[in-house]
Structures are given as structure tokens and as C-alpha cells.
Length: 168
Image (cartoon, rainbow, N blue to C red; front, side, top):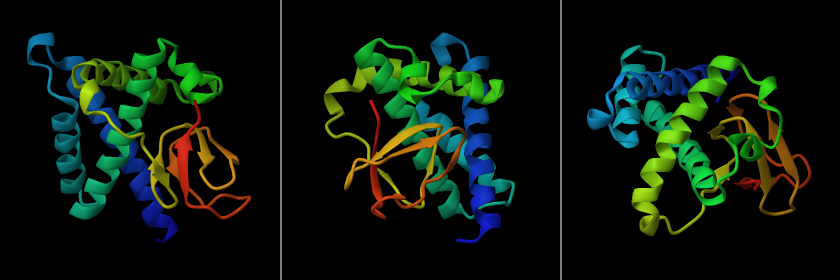
């Protein structure tokens, strides 16, 4: 994948996150959409802008679902602040991105409480995917990779492994 396509997908991830945030922040509690529906709506709008193919928009939507689900699980299960999930000071992130992630993760944690029985396996991140800011740990060698902004996941710099877990 070329650099321009990587940049487009990262921009699309942040754009979808912004759209999900707007859907949640403007909806009344009684008519708030489910996270999956909000992300599907954001995917479609992103595709219609013409910067991504339908498949790429769906991929980016899956990355966003994965990250928000993991954040929500962390908040729900530990009761800790999102700062701990990121494993670095949120001040390094843009205020806009931080607000959107925190807002969407809070909504996600509510959905997770309702669906906890169906959550059976932990999320895995792979080289080439997009991830939210935070720390990933290589499943092969344990090397940590720190992301201070939305980015593509590279191979492990230590062992070239390609699958990661979120550091908890």
C-alpha cells in the first residue's frame, strides 16, 4: 500500500471517529444509535466522499470498532481512566481526537455491559491495520510499540512479528 493510501486511511479513521462522535453527541439518550450502526453510517459517508473504496472504508470501520470495543472493555472491566489504556499522557494527543475517543469509548462501555456474555476473545491487532493511540505488545516477543496518534501498525521492530495485543 502506498504512502498516499496510508494517509487517506488514517484520515478516514479520524473522520469516521468524528462522525461517530457527532452522532452520539447530538442524539437524545432514547434514540442514540448503536455503535455498529453509527460506524456503518460513518463508513458509508466516508466511501461517498470518494477517498476510499467500499472495501477500504469497511476495513477502516472494523479498525475503529476494534479500538472502541477494546477501550470500552478496559473502562468497563477495570474502572480505570482511559489514560491508563493509552499508557501515556493524553496531553500529547490533539484535544479534538481525545474528546472524540473518550466520548465514543464511554458509549461503547455501555454497550459492552449489555453484551458482556458475547465477548469471548480478546482483540488482536495486525501489521498493516490502523490503530488508535496507545501501546501494542508483540505477541511473538513482547516488544512494546507506542502510538501517540492514529497510525498504521508496522511489523515488530524487534522480531518482525505481525500480531499484537493492547497493553493493559
